[in-house]
Length: 474
Image (cartoon, rainbow, N blue to C red; front, side):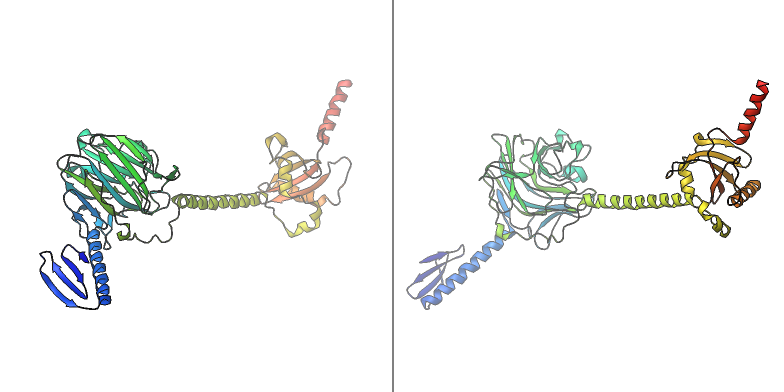
């Protein structure tokens, strides 16, 4: 039997192993048991496979295609905050706000291209994120150097946005809804040409070949997903497909649209990735990437891809982070208002009690009852006013009895004297020609005397009216 490697050939004969170079020069030969030979061959093949796996991880570039199952040792051009992590991940943004990052390759071509890459977006919150990331091709690095973060994703700026001379093509994986860019929503894929306003866009997701159903994908789920971008130069058609990592490329693309990229896919161009952050902390990762001209991109070795950072406990929803403080503040404010109302209510109805009043306790009305009976001592219930106070009509809530409430101010010494005299006389003074005094009440700034309400007026009015009538009749 014969086993070949790029560097040597192993020949096995009866009880003999011969190791030859490519030039058939014998390196070594010895006789050994056949069982030991099998162990040696197995070990050698494992070493060759491991060596090839390492080469695939580092990546290879023959000018027409390349495949990176990790980015350690690659010759990508990095700028902004982009960097390759110690474990070989391409991190375009590092979690700081209002930053941009680029990673790209120069290439020479003016024809069809095919690419696939694995990405993951780690947002500060599980439901909100900064603007996303993009795969791009441009003819000028100057466009990238003057680009802005935020809604421009590190691709363009306010001046050259919608400028046909920008010569930049992008597939954006957008995680922020921006009305100025006419975004579909805050979780979509779009294809752009010389503008952040997408020529075509769709909800992030994939078509299931088995069922034909469409499945949504959350770009900020912190899970790895794979994207395929194919450009057919002869048909001037672009196709974008995506799926969760580990699922084969769906047959039906997410987006397929006509687009002439002759202005950007020129003899000299740059191909790579861009991302940017806005007001929220976000990290954008590319885990693996392959690219080819005029042929399908090499398949990525899923098993060789480096692991993403541990997710850890999920961040609280941004909505909750906004709603909870507002709700808490509202609750505290509401409780404060309630306490204020209760204190004010208590002060409004607060009464003054003194020892001498104990003897007249049963005749005392609560200030609250009198306040409600007179409708808050409203002007509509005012019967009259004099030097010592004002008199209001009222109806007691429990008994529905009509009463007249005389309100005497503490500032009136004469009124205070009258109040004490009236209260002291309640137990002993009764006369059919006097208006009955039912009781009293005291509050911090006033005295209140409660009388039976006289529908026809007071006794003096009654006597005065009768004397007038007598004079007229005589």
